[in-house]
Image 1 (spheres, rainbow, N blue to C red):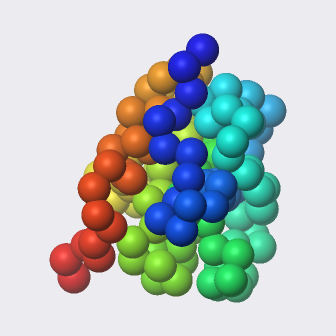
Image 2 (image 1 turned 90 degrees about the vertical axis):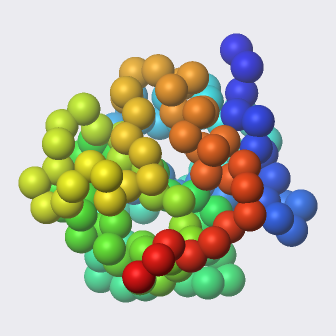
Image 3 (image 1 turned 90 degrees about the horizontal axis):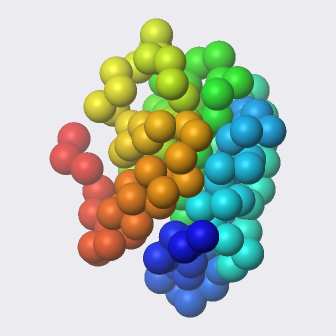
Length: 132
């Protein structure tokens, strides 16, 4: 299986992926897509919503899993902490509290190659803050 093309961040360190409210299927897809060179940390949506993401261990990309009850709240919390952070929704369901186009991507949840495409695009160019 070909893994994601981006495995290092701008500082040359292992890419840090934050996986929020994951299911075992979410974890399997992310591990398959990411490969061994990527550091994956797990967090509950309640923890992320309750406090800001620490900057010294901030993720390079965030993936919101299928168990997330309020993905829109998580998206806004993550973007408030870091407007440049790519946030991908791993869900086949449409979120009630956010529009799908607010997320950087929402690939099919059972296809590691589909996850690799938006993640690689997110890091393909220079990071820039979205227009307010």
